[in-house]
Length: 290
Image (tube, rainbow, N blue to C red; front, side, top):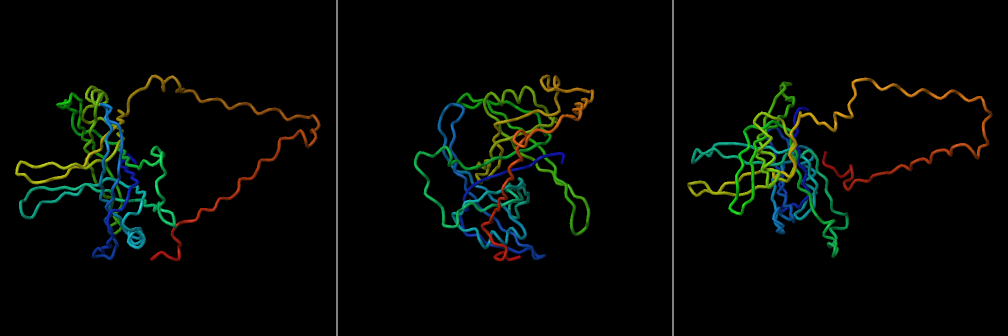
């Protein structure tokens, strides 16, 4: 793997699930997940809101989602970001939409239904919206300042995915371009140190916002709001101090003792066996439609 494109969310399905079939008979489902969030901004202001995510699920996992996922169900989803582009048939304008392609889906609700949120436990009720990418910077960072005095930088980061086509057995490649937004002091550091063509690791949350075109049409754009940006392939003095080019010699084995063995009470106790843990899935194999 030479790049990384990963996103994980915990949220709630917002509407009934509809299974579609491709011409080849493969099941596909589009989930609509809402993730409420709450955090404190760089200025110390509490921020509350909701992010919405389209998640596409394929194959047998789509069949399971169609049968078991109901509106309001809490789900964990792990996958990758994919942006599909097309040309509007009426205006000829280029359009795009970013979604999550699911690789893992876990249903989180107990068998007897969701519990009421306990009072005073807000710290353990936060949901998950996390994206990570390792890729190449596609343009130099340009530092801007908002009317409120906040520094902000937008980066373009490209990631690559390779796979083998099952029908043709050919190796194919797809490039994803991610818009990464960085705020505050981290934005200043990114502008000073990150240049086009360099490789970076970014981590943050996925956000889709709306804007209007000059013609007054409503459009959407999806971004990674980064709270960590790491410039890769750079020397690190602290790490270099721990690196040795000389192989470490193995410690000599102790010489066998000729002394008589001690009583059983002086011997090291036998390790306690670890009990086997049996995990029971919410979904029984006999219930699955495949």
